[in-house]
Length: 147
Image (tube, rainbow, N blue to C red; front, side):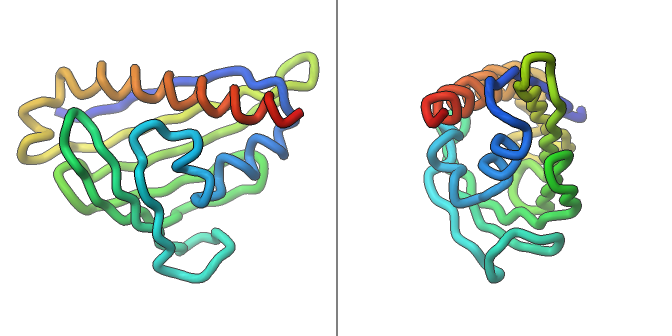
């Protein structure tokens, strides 16, 4: 069973600010609740082909995976994917202007779980949506506090 979860939030910051911050893997541990470490496997800055290793905790389990950047359009879209671990997944960020000068950020995670993930897929979407909503709320708080 495939998992495809999309969440979004409005952030009272310019799109360029939100996109630059969110698409920098070095900021991930500050706004993602479950990501514990980030390790670059290719040189900075992030470009298509960059590889970044993450360690996270999800549903009480430690998960390590390496994302590869697949697409990057400044201030519009950032796409990473991994084929590793129990949950091969693609993560997509998109940014759009909203009235009043803010930004709508959308976070989408889609993939085909295997092993433990396949058994838990029906519940995984619910847990992932909740986690993504918390992450986006944390991102909003971090960025709005800076302006």
